[in-house]
Image 1: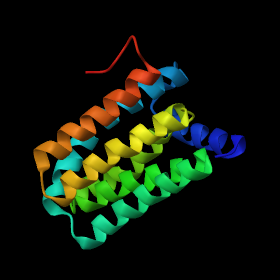
Image 2 (image 1 turned 90 degrees about the vertical axis):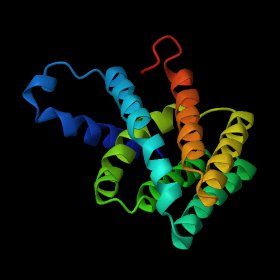
Image 3 (image 1 turned 180 degrees about the horizontal axis):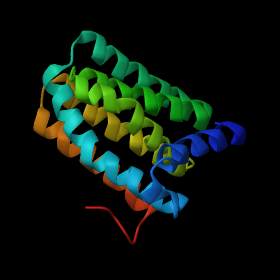
Image 4 (image 1 turned 180 degrees about the vertical axis):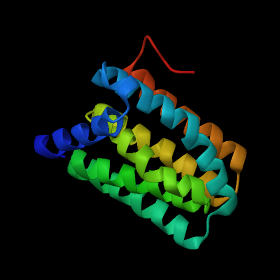
Length: 172
């Protein structure tokens, strides 16, 4: 994402909270990022488990397309393409739950997730390769309907990303 798009996205996310008078007084962008990470850690592992149980061929195809975009991005050294693939992958997980509540939460969580994705995607290519390997393990767990494994792998993926951003203050 270029700086202009990232700025407008950041403003949009902050705007989600500005209507709330209790939050309006003190929105710190690092604190917002921290809460976005906690939100992901709360919902995405459960969404992954549900996706493993409910996904169909189309959902698995979408997961695979996101994964292929990430792999291609690594080959090209294209961090923006990697972000797009990562978002496509995570969106496919939420849609693959076939749960109307998770599907409605998808856009909110992915919008806020962009903050954490953008803060970890500038990693070295080796780190991105490791992330793709972890996503592959997750995709296989989903493909083979292994809900518990999908949940634990997603939890670890998110925890690893959060530790990169907040090494001293990992959310529970």
